Amino acid sequence: MPTSIRLAPETEQRLDHLASHTGRSKAYYLREIIEQGIGHLEDYYLAADVRERVRKGQEAVHSAADVRKDLGLDD
Image 1: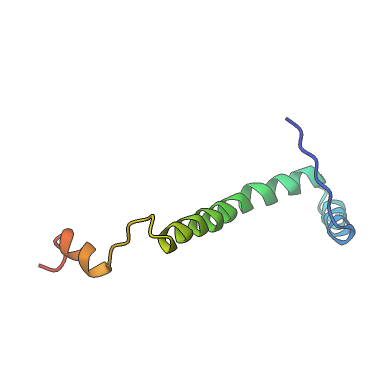
Image 2: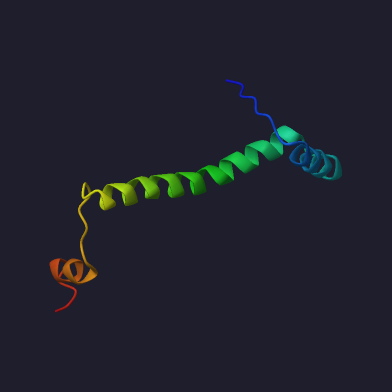
Protein backbone atom coordinates (compact mmCIF):
# COMPACT_ATOMS: atom_id res chain seq x y z
CA MET A 1 0.00 0.00 0.00
CA PRO A 2 1.55 3.34 -1.01
CA THR A 3 2.24 5.96 1.62
CA SER A 4 2.99 9.59 0.97
CA ILE A 5 4.76 12.10 3.17
CA ARG A 6 5.58 15.79 2.99
CA LEU A 7 9.18 16.70 3.61
CA ALA A 8 10.64 20.04 4.52
CA PRO A 9 12.26 21.63 1.46
CA GLU A 10 15.75 21.28 2.98
CA THR A 11 15.19 17.58 3.64
CA GLU A 12 13.86 17.09 0.12
CA GLN A 13 16.96 18.80 -1.30
CA ARG A 14 19.26 16.61 0.80
CA LEU A 15 17.43 13.50 -0.36
CA ASP A 16 17.60 14.66 -4.01
CA HIS A 17 21.32 15.32 -3.65
CA LEU A 18 21.99 11.92 -2.09
CA ALA A 19 19.97 10.10 -4.75
CA SER A 20 21.54 11.94 -7.67
CA HIS A 21 25.09 11.43 -6.39
CA THR A 22 24.70 7.74 -5.65
CA GLY A 23 22.45 6.63 -8.49
CA ARG A 24 19.87 5.20 -6.12
CA SER A 25 16.26 6.30 -6.01
CA LYS A 26 14.77 8.56 -3.36
CA ALA A 27 12.33 5.73 -2.58
CA TYR A 28 15.29 3.46 -1.83
CA TYR A 29 16.66 5.89 0.75
CA LEU A 30 13.26 6.57 2.28
CA ARG A 31 12.74 2.82 2.75
CA GLU A 32 16.20 2.51 4.31
CA ILE A 33 15.55 5.41 6.68
CA ILE A 34 12.21 3.98 7.76
CA GLU A 35 13.39 0.39 8.13
CA GLN A 36 16.46 1.38 10.12
CA GLY A 37 14.70 4.03 12.16
CA ILE A 38 11.51 2.22 13.12
CA GLY A 39 13.34 0.08 15.67
CA HIS A 40 14.66 3.19 17.41
CA LEU A 41 11.20 4.74 17.49
CA GLU A 42 9.63 1.54 18.82
CA ASP A 43 12.26 1.34 21.55
CA TYR A 44 11.73 4.96 22.55
CA TYR A 45 7.94 5.07 22.54
CA LEU A 46 7.40 1.63 24.06
CA ALA A 47 9.92 2.43 26.81
CA ALA A 48 8.19 5.75 27.44
CA ASP A 49 4.91 3.87 27.79
CA VAL A 50 6.41 1.47 30.35
CA ARG A 51 8.00 4.40 32.20
CA GLU A 52 4.61 6.07 32.48
CA ARG A 53 3.01 2.86 33.80
CA VAL A 54 5.81 2.56 36.38
CA ARG A 55 5.28 6.18 37.40
CA LYS A 56 1.55 5.50 37.88
CA GLY A 57 2.24 2.31 39.85
CA GLN A 58 0.68 0.15 37.15
CA GLU A 59 3.87 -1.78 36.33
CA ALA A 60 5.81 -4.04 38.69
CA VAL A 61 9.35 -2.94 39.50
CA HIS A 62 12.04 -5.26 40.88
CA SER A 63 15.37 -4.25 42.35
CA ALA A 64 18.56 -5.76 40.96
CA ALA A 65 19.23 -7.29 44.37
CA ASP A 66 15.85 -9.04 44.38
CA VAL A 67 16.35 -10.35 40.85
CA ARG A 68 19.82 -11.70 41.70
CA LYS A 69 18.40 -13.37 44.81
CA ASP A 70 15.43 -14.87 42.95
CA LEU A 71 17.75 -16.25 40.26
CA GLY A 72 20.19 -17.63 42.80
CA LEU A 73 23.02 -15.45 41.52
CA ASP A 74 24.17 -14.34 44.96
CA ASP A 75 25.05 -17.86 46.12
